[in-house]
Length: 530
Image 1: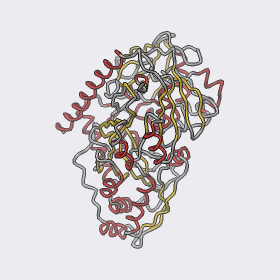
Image 2: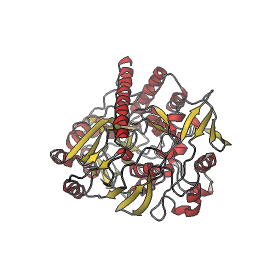
Image 3: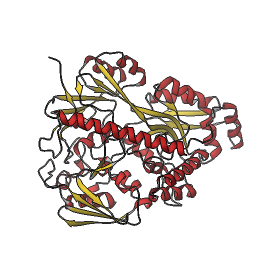
C-alpha cells in the first residue's frame, strides 16, 4: 500500500511540474499564433451542454464554451479557482464561492451568483421546466446520497453558497467536471429545448463561442475576444466528424486537419510521418464489458464469471491496442488512488468456463444480445472487430451472441435505462479521484441499485459512501481497494484494457502540452510554414 501511495503522489508531482512549465511557456508567447485549428474525430457530439451529456465528444466541445466554478490545474489533480476567484468551508458542509467580477456570457448577459444558482436549480430539480425532459446523469450520480445538496444560496451579487447534507471531501474536485459548467440562463430560456443542440447553440463564458453545428459533419467555434482569461490564440476551432478510420487518417496525413483521433491500426503510419507529433499520457481509462443483473442469465454470478473467463483478453489487447495500453487486472488503473494490485487473476480458461455454465444450469450454453459501441474510443479502438473476436471466444463455450449497435446518443441512453443485457463501454477519469471512477459506476443508496445494470451490493454501497467523505488519503485508499475487491469478486464488470492517452498533432501546431484532465486549446496556435 505504501508503494502504491508513493506512486500516486509521484504521478501527481510530475503532473504539477509539467503544468507549471507549460504555464510559463504558453503565457510568455501569448501574443503570437492564431489561425484555424481542425480536429478530426470519429463521432459527433450528442449535446454541447456538459450538464446533460455523458460522452466525451460532447464534453470536449462544451468544455471550450462553458466553464465551471473551479478547475483542475492542467495535468494535476490540484483544484484551482476559475469562475470562482476563491472558496472556503469551515465544516465541509457549507461552501462559499466568491465569484469572478466583470465576467460576461457570450450573449452579453452578466455572470453572477443568480446565474450560478439558476444553473444549480436546473440540475437539482427533476421537474425544473428548463431541463426539457433530459437526463442529468452526472448530477444525479455525483450529488446522490454520497454528497447531497440540501440548499444553494445567493449571498450577494458575487457570492454563492452550497450547503451539503453532510461533510464531503470531494465536492471541489467534482465541481471541476464539465458537467457542472455554467450556461447563460437567458440563452437556455430563449432557446428552450433547442439549447445545446444543432438547432440551437450553447452559451457560456469560455474562451470559444459557438458558431454553427452541422450534424455528423462539423461544429465550429470562434474566439471569444472578451474572454476574462489569457488567450485564446486560435481564431477558429472546428470539430469534424469523420467516422471512417481510413478517411480520417488520410485527411490527417494530407494536412487538412491539425489533430486526429486515430484507430490503433493507423497509429504507426502517423508516427512514421515526420510532419506529425504524438504524445502519450498515463493510463487513466478502462474498457469493460457489463451485464444486466436483473435478468437471466446474468443474475447468476457463475454465468458472469464464465463469460469473463471465456474471453481471451490478452489476445484482444495484443491485437487491437497500442503498446502503451495494458491488460486490465481490475477496474481502476494503477494511477487512480484505490486501485487494488492484489486482486485475484482473471484467468482465461474456456474449460473452467464451461463447467461454471453447467453449474449455473446452462450446460448447453445460451443466446444473448451483445451491444458494441458505434464510435472509435481509446478504450475500444475497433469496437466491432473486438466484439466479433469476443463472440468467437464465447461460441467455444456454447454462448451465442447477437451483435448489435445503434447511434451513439441512443446507445448511451438505452444503456442508462437498463435495456441492454450485455454491452461494452469504457471510462476515462475526469479528475483522478476514485469517487469519479469506481464510485461513479457503483455508488448507490443502500438497497437501491442502479437501473443501468441492477448490481446490488450493500456492503459496496456503504464503502463508497464512506470513501466520499473520508479526508485521510491512506484511509480512502484502503476503502476503495476493499470496494474494488468486492466488484471483482462479484464479476460485476469484465475489465479488458487500461488505456493510455494518445494525442496526434501536425507539426504546425504550437503550444500543446500533454494534459490529462482538461483541454489546452486556448494556449494553442497553428503556424503554417512560409
